[in-house]
Length: 107
Image (cartoon, rainbow, N blue to C red; front, top):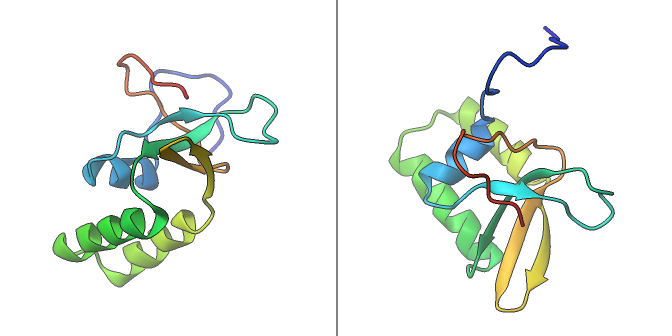
């Protein structure tokens, strides 16, 4: 159902909720070639394998069922990354970041 009027905070995506639960700090980011469009991202010192390992460990420990895991893996695999010196930004160009009403972090 499409709603042309915003009636308050939008529901966070499952991926955003997962990243927060794994102790990453989801935030807004505009990556290369996005022309100012913002999306869901995390900034971390962790390399790609470490991020994915943490996420999969969380999924298993918290008894996600196979349908939920497949859905989240499909969303996860659409990420892109940029290097920020000693840190990395992993972002999902097709996932909108939903502000939680706190001070929004923007990269």
